[in-house]
Image (tube, rainbow, N blue to C red; front, side, top):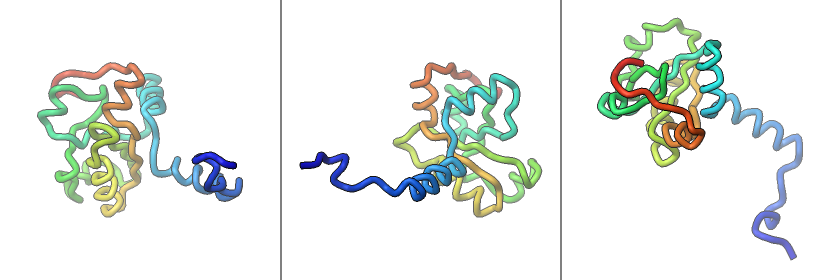
Length: 134
């Protein structure tokens, strides 16, 4: 007799390795972003893709407010073509970061999603910044 977890067999280790390594090319987490920002070694631009009003209310320190609908080729030209963008939105219940990642990828820009967004940041106990300054 098996349980709900093992009713479907696990992937072969080689397949699991490919899958999980691939996921790391598409996403990062709040801890890795926090660690990079606080150590001053961030080699990415952190984009808050929520509305300016929500950004003003609170955001992750160091983030730039750029809603996904405002991501145009002209606007993104402010950064070198090889710039890695890390996008986030409200949290797992929000698809704004996914929409931003799609838009950036279509513009030929490197992008990762910060999984968890604002909710994940709060769950880790990290502080937010209030106001429009990043």
